[in-house]
Length: 574
Ligand SMILES: [Zn+2]
Ligand SMILES: [Zn+2]
Image 1 (cartoon, rainbow, N blue to C red):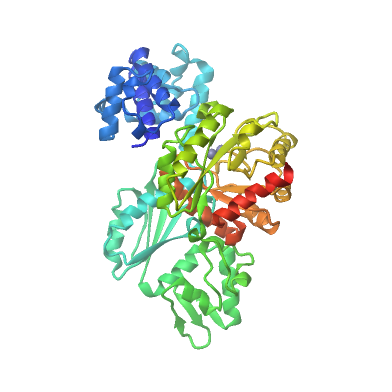
Image 2 (cartoon, rainbow, N blue to C red):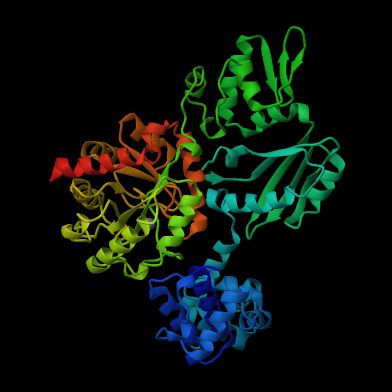
């Protein structure tokens, strides 16, 4: 249990109490405790006695101890049993907080979305004190939206669904091997459904296990070569499993990985050789002989090609590029991560815990980059705290002789285009990231002026998440990426590919453009706890999609090359 999870737990207790209609002092005790923990710089392991923090009473402190040692609390478990579970998703609806839901529950016996919808239709909501006809209309509209599944879902959602599903696949003993196929394997940003290729000797037991999966809501197809089920991951997701014998596994996998455009190019290549590609293998059109392959690498080398990773199968120029060995970026090239948060701002773990996690990954260097003061909700650091944190980072760094911990900051570019920290502090830092977290609705000129201010600062080395988008949820601000790429190159500033699967900006197309312009790229996880440092793998996948070579990504550089790059900009511009 880390601090973030504990805080979440306390906030959940508060919401449940509120829905239950408990008095507001009781509710706010938990919210205050959550806030007190949030504002403390220490990680959970470093806080010995929570009752000593101001804002945390004895009773609450006891609950905190209980959660810390057991991972849960009797209180929350009891509340969960008492409060109808269907009320919780209603918190997502605009304008509905715990108090209003309590009222709906108490006075209209509403327990879930269905009963709420019915009450809207019967015009009962508008009669409640504090609601009104407009509110009722808004709730009805939002309920309708909530029930609709968009055609495609964001990759972050699908990666999590796949992870859960694969835990089940790993437990089916009759599965010889399996792989993801389709758009998830290609790491597309928005994904319609999930595809798996499974090698089996006998399909029957596997078919049976799949249709009986705990996620299966509806069986769409139930055959010995293809099983399709609709799974419930909070949203309905169709999953297609293709059951094949081991011999055709590689070709079937290639076929169902796509992309369509890539497959068309492969078929054209085969045709020139007098061959035909199908999901079962490659057939010689004259003799009828069928070639099969044990791996996709063998499949590609049949055509004189080197292995093309699924992410790069986009149907552009990959066939030509992979005729020769192509030095493509891979996870093993990564020497460090330059963007992460700790309990000093809105992260869940201490500087030391993050550093240890980086060392365990085999990183040679890593930067701590908490938020700066403008971001008050994240408890951002002012100049005085930055200086204190630098001392702390130095102290920890001194303990290592195999690892460099860099003192950094993620500094806000304020709405008026000024930078959030004074130069005398920036000077003391090893690396400075600048980013936009506010006033997303500004015009392109205003946004570009803000970015330009950061690019022109001798101390800013990286522009983080350069478009501000959240895949499938938020467009981002109006940035002219073409000119950002050009200006970043000219000023010696690196552009970030944010490896968080919700963000993944720059997107692959822009990354490729950046690499063609010799603008340096950095791939960072923006981790807020040690677990999400694993997102590096996702970032590298997007790098592969953009066909990046290792040297185009500064995370593959040695410590001395990295420092030289940062220092160079300072010397040029000061
Ligand atoms: Zn940020
Ligand atoms: Zn960040």
